[in-house]
Length: 332
Image (cartoon, rainbow, N blue to C red; front, side, top):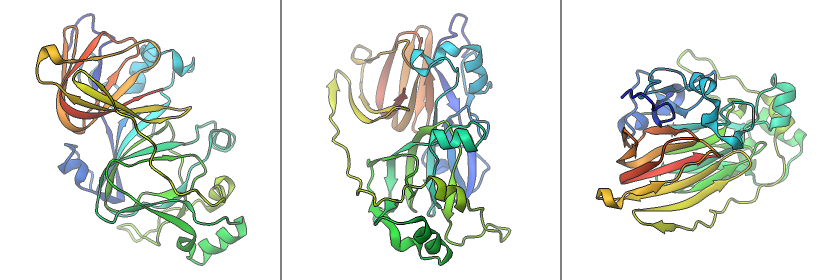
């Protein structure tokens, strides 16, 4: 829907898609992702990263990469993103049909010094689905030395030192750079992270791809950045629901890199629509994780469904939401 004077209007995003040996079918079957990629492991819902950039799926910029749109309109990012003009986050949906590799990410300082000025990677997971008995790896169950970890990797005994954590739908996990981790089989996760694609694999279960090749490991870099201290067992954060007319809102995560809220929308008539507050401070990205609804602006309507993502410029027109849906609202 192209409209004159709607340059600062929100728009749907078309994600980049990623295959991996550990992917599955849930993103296609349950989240409406259309792709020939098989197995579909990840969709990069909101991304300007060169390894997978999302596109505008409607509006006056339909078909343009998000990065190009933000170069044309750096004000869309808002004042809290600084003067760099770069989208600071990357938002994904992840379908773990099998266990992901045991891995770790560098922090900003290490990445800047050793990865050509790239960002590090701190991330947050929101669990959308989990099989009964699903678990993930979160840190070590005891403090190790580099020598002990190297020996365990060489001897294929590293699992005895990893902390396994049961997972349920609606759980939240904050994973700082340096924390060894792995998403386990049988879950779908929304991941909000720094705008980075730096992953150092420590262990990949001796798996091979369809060509019989093992995936690359990054042992030395991983040993440089990994936190070897015993990890505290992650507890679910205290979450306070704030109820408004037609919707409820709860904060899931706030850190120096991003803020994530869960919005539960339940409106039936126009007069009950929820006001969606925008301002110049930050862009917002709405990721619909359940249900469906509509976003209304001046001369602009976006109908969204489970799995859809909407980019809302920081200086967007006044907006209202309507429908029965659950959404993640990401900003900085």
